[in-house]
Length: 207
Image (cartoon, rainbow, N blue to C red; front, top):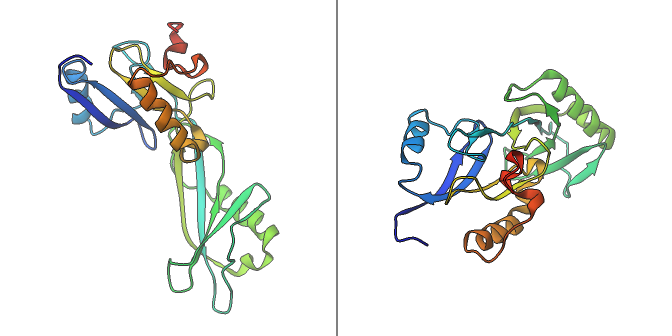
């Protein structure tokens, strides 16, 4: 590595979208200052060059949380089926809560919970556990999933020297986190060239 000050951390690319960056401090100082003043790195990342390339965060997902009424028992295991998962959270509230998720909606940066998604999740979970019709809605929220234009992850060197990207895993970020962390460490340290299919520069034809 050159003898210069390096920055390592995460940057927020719009609601719900994060990028891993490691860069020479002076390389992006003005850009980072502007982004920091705005309170976010917005939804643009320098994949093609200093002007940035938009990486759309298109995957919206909604989740609901139900509380059991008196006399109802929280399921012990995670229950899967009907395109939903039901995760017991016994430590929440007096009798625990049941998390039910998640929808997949292509709605840009909208994080507004919808009645349609709420009813869809509740009805699907009710097919697995009919007693849920009597449970109480405790919470309902929506989040965004980082998704690249072609649906493949963004892992590796960007078009700017010293800027590395780890993003675009959509619904699988947590599941793949250990493997992604190892791969990114190897790429940053020069131990791996990464996969061409995941190269962030593929959108500009620079790979």
